[in-house]
Length: 252
Image (tube, rainbow, N blue to C red; front, side, top):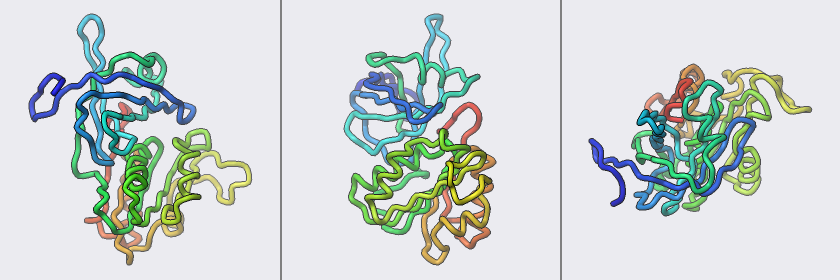
């Protein structure tokens, strides 16, 4: 196995950037080829390490965006103006450049094709990334488990994977996608921009009686609010899994 061993059994592997594509005004997907990649489950993440010529290194965690596919790995990075790592990944790295990655990491916030119950996904901003991996993994496995996604974003320009989500929702009868805009809505949008609230959850989410597994990902305040709204609506707290991140972009 190629890579440098570290405590806990994970290793650093050197992947090669194959392509970088824009997903929104500030989000970019990096397509990597990682030799000897062991595979991953939808919902897991990796560490990315950048090392400067003087030896200084910085490590950040990013959710995996794609379903398992050999040595293929996709990471979607939200560029932060004051970030230490994300501007380099979003603007500077070019195809052919090496990138060190460690993973996959995490075994709790995952969806597996063996799950047949309804799945409720709730994303805030770039929290869509691990949930998109679940949607893609579901399609790859030809699963018929009912999926619903409630995706909260600031504006239409902030939507990540917008075209793909709309296309999948149109083609897959058991996948429903609801967008909730908090600041600016598209022209002609029937709802006023506002944060996700009980009314939005009631309209977009599965009813508690269907006992869905719920996955909530986004900034900490959003995740706490969304999880509390699901619980208030009658969902079993034991069936709600959360993943949160802060300004550094950790775990998303």
